[in-house]
Image (cartoon, helix red, strand yellow):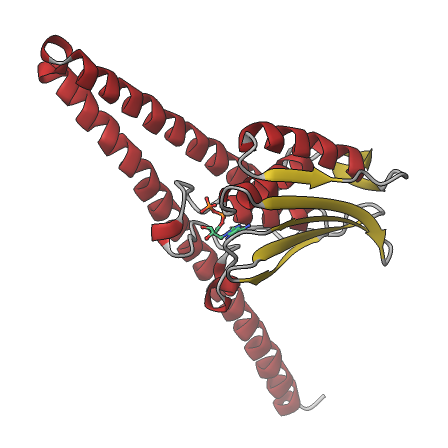
Length: 264
Ligand code: ADP
């Protein structure tokens, strides 16, 4: 063969390899940046309740115990609340990390309608009558392959939000059905809804639409929900009308889960 041709072919091959390497490095860099962002956001979220706990503890230490038992009790209450918030947050962070590592899912054949029923019962207890939670369990089982604990958690997140973002007297409705060969869980509410401008972001980690209307969450619930759905080869989608309500829909393949993308 002509050595010149040979060199030309080699150059092309090497250039191709180089640009693939470059692309891989850029993806790595992006993943690292997302990890840095995640760690920074997580630390920030943890620092807020921690600051509050330290402040109240200092107050107790300095004077409240002896001089003002009522005030002391308030501080103890605040410490408990903030500690519980930190506990929830740490749980969520752990769930996200586990999901990123792709581990811990135990797939089995289950009835999505039964899982929904369990989540509804928990939500009714939490809502305490302020929001009604309606569910008509379908006559037939809606079988699919999934990790029961994770899907129960996902349903819990959607229901929790439906109750949280619906004013007193409103309604959350759960539906489970089979459609287009997939198992579907739909959670709709008559709540405050989500403005169009915020729709693209609600599934992002630490995203809270307008913090002034948020009720204490760290903005992790929906990102965990989406991560769980994707680990099953499924999807979660939202449609919403501000002032009227929102509908979140989980769709799961009925057969074994598809390939999953690593998160973060
Ligand atoms: P959190 O509820 O802890 O703030 P999520 O990740 O669960 O975090 O939700 C992100 C944001 O999406 C919320 O802050 C809220 O603004 C919006 N959102 C979620 N669910 C609903 C809902 N059912 N109705 C209205 N807004 C919602």
